[in-house]
Amino acid sequence: MYDEPDDQPRYRDVSEIGTSDIYNALMSLAGFAGNPYLVMQASQLCLVDNSLNALEQEVMRHRFDDEPPRGKIALAGALSPMWIYAAYELQRTWRQRCEEVIKLAENVGIDLKASHLERDLGYRHYDRELRAQQLRDAQSRPELVEQMRLDLRRTEMGFTTLEFIRVALAKHEVSKKGAKKPIAFAPGLARINRWCGSMEYELSNGGGIISYVTRRDIAESIRFIPEAENPSDEDLAGFRAYMNPPDIEAPTG
Image (cartoon, rainbow, N blue to C red; front, side, top):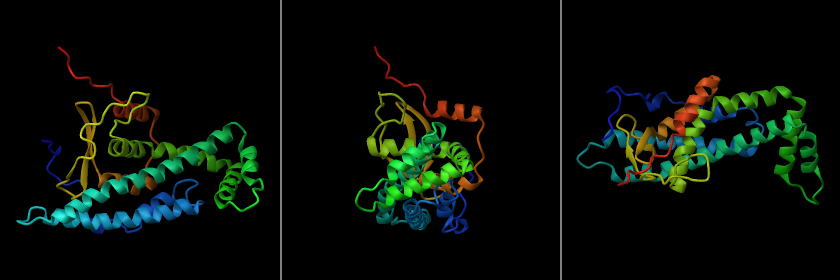
């Protein structure tokens, strides 16, 4: 049985969380607010987070009752992975767009790509037009490209942790580089965190447990984006090694 490192709660009360904190945090990322589709999804992610916060608080408040709220516990267990998938895909899409812009800027390819997206198709394609405009913005504002680089670094640790959980939940694999993906240990299995009522998941590789992360931890990492500092190269290298441990094989003989 896993024990918390100390007996003090590490989560703030739900009443201290702003109902638009996740939305505002995502809007602060370079290139995010200029895409209305990302903005729409950020609003949806924030709304569902607010509902889950209230649900998790209710679960925590009554889980030791003679008749615990089994229906609400089951609902939290079902909705949490869905929210995690949405949080992952939203950030993955933003990161992919930033990486594309940075690569094009480095190879002086923004104008060519934008012109390709702007060509006449015989009908209006709104997202192509939007992407072309975003590329033109990056072309005229080199500081935007630099801010994208910085924001990708500042959010890497939180996103990598989220990706680790998402891969275990969705693909039943361990998130690792290379073609060989170890089988995840008990993918999708979660328990109620005693301090916040959120679903808590294992980050494991083979028989080794790397860490435990709750849905609330993921949400807080997003809310923290505006305050996140640029990590040093040493910190990033250490984190990447920590999240990509060597495979642990079962003993033979």
